[in-house]
Amino acid sequence: MTSNTPTPTWPLQRFGKHWGLRRLADDQGLFSMVAIDQRPPIVQCVARARGIAPQAVAFDDIVQVKGLLAQALAPHASAMLVDPDFGLPAAAPFLQPGRGLLLTLEEHRYDDRPDGRLSRVIPNWSVAQIRRLGADAVKLLAWYRPDASEAVRQQQQDFVRSVGQACAEHDIAFIFELLVYPFAAQPGEPANYDEDAAKQPQLVIDSVRDFAHPSFGIDLFKLESPVPMAALPAPDRADAAREQQVYDAMGQACGGTPWVMLSAGGSQRSFEHAITYACRAGASGFLAGRAVWWDALAAYPDAGAVALALQAQAVPYLLGLRDLVAREAKPWRADVSFERITAEGQVCQARGAVADLKV
Image (tube, rainbow, N blue to C red; front, side, top):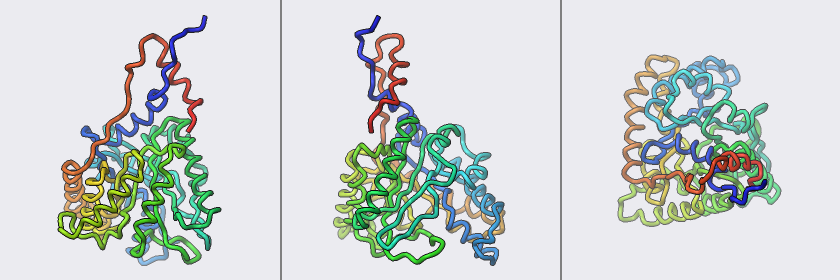
């Protein structure tokens, strides 16, 4: 006998995604997430500290640095972003059971071409593996320029869309980091990502708009400042209206998808300015790394001194950012309801239909 009762679809098909985002946020629906998934910056930091070439940096050194960061910052962040190769082994003992966990998908190495830059996944790594490990979300960084060649743009869009489809299949939240980059990069090992001081705001805004379509399956944008952070005036200055308009345009380009700010290695003061502009434009918090903890690493390889510096500098700064977000940010709310569930078996039917979801 076939039931005439309609099978519920939305939002139960995305319950896992919403549940994951809920774990990344605090009780007020605000994101104060810390990233320790950086690889080249930490390798270069250790290399300088030890007076060796980056290629000679030991696995144990990288793990030690990331462990120090996790131990100090995990208790104060709404979620932690870690990479699988170094960050997860380092951070696992310090991750908080009541807080969120994001795992990085992208390889830090990329393919630079004269007509643009191509991203790729860490070898032997996938969305399915991230879900099996029990993480709350997948984080993907893709380099993108709207003025790159059509072939490069199409490859990057196809790459992101494939990740979005995998996240939909496994019902896991998809956090997408989008970075505009300078052309004409030098050959060889990629350098640190440092914010492009000459970037054009419209390129950043147009990049966001290119990925706002639901077909990409993005649940949360992690966005850079559309204006070089070092050039940002204090948000409450009389001459700050133009910068706020640029941030407002970026928020509108998200098309209703929630978003947070990244720090891109900016100074602590400039990142505070960027978060304020962003939150006033509708952002729901931040996912930041080096702005929070970079200065404390100056004491490495003295692990004890690094730990003290993190407690004295990084933790108070992180708590200050949380207060700023609490004052200024737009809370995110889970769109999950069981109102259409009226009979036994409907939840199982709805959850079984995930494979039919079209993104």
